[in-house]
Length: 398
Image (spheres, rainbow, N blue to C red):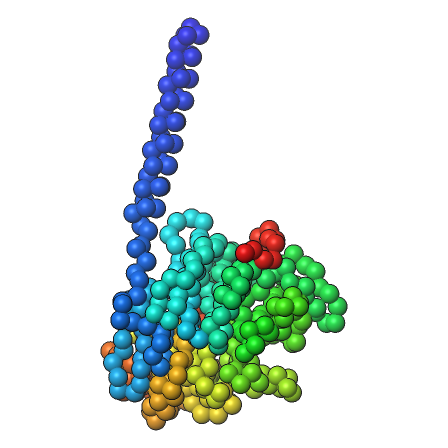
């Protein structure tokens, strides 16, 4: 074959490659556009200004409210993957379609109108609003999707609505561990909870394979470790105790138990919940915790409650629900209604198959409370995982 023929063949091959590449890019962009959900907004009549238990309705993905015992579930909030509300503001985390994974953090006012929107890398994982509603935090998985492995990486942000300052990642905060300044490229923070002064906070830090409960100071820009083996802390309304998940087993099906730590004495005790809780618990009041467990009968998850002092028994608070947040006196009525239901206590060691139990239609607690006969240990609603680190970024951006 003469040289012009070889050149012609080469030109045809290059042209074909370019056409195929262009077609593939067009397909990817078109598919990404087609799969992008509209991001359902809240109904005009739905707000977070009424008392009750707010949560994510896992059947439809929208935020709902349970106003009191016997009242129907009201589902009219925005669509979210994680949600929290307090002090007249709400935080809604949504996973955006496409690769790499991205999360949209929506800050909303009491009428669920958008105040600020931030797009961050990773998968939605934790959301918290301070009691005043002025400081917010979220955590995403930038690598992996479960805390129950050694291959995950997180990014935790803090937003101060009073100043508009966004701390994109709190990993740069100076950390004191064992009385000395700690530096390591594997540091991960997650699960922030705020004190009433909107300055102090508690969070989990993981480094060198060990998790620690840390107390942080935003103004001083410092953090210190208080103890080991404490994840996803949640500070009580009176600021005296922290609920957290403690690793008690290497069994991936049931690695954690829900514990409460007295910050004055640093003494801990387990809650009466024997199933593995993979959630950042919420306080309904100074004596009661709420948290999500995997649901039954095809439900993604259910919200349960348990006394914080280690007594009592777990009670079903809201079926087909996750991301609990308590607002006002309506929650107290719900808690009292739930605690009036009979529940059979179980232990995490039991291995019997889940028994059939009457479950509600998703209209709220009270008559939907069930007998806890499903005694097999359950892993948490949120899978989670620790590995490659993201480049450090400056701590604060306006």
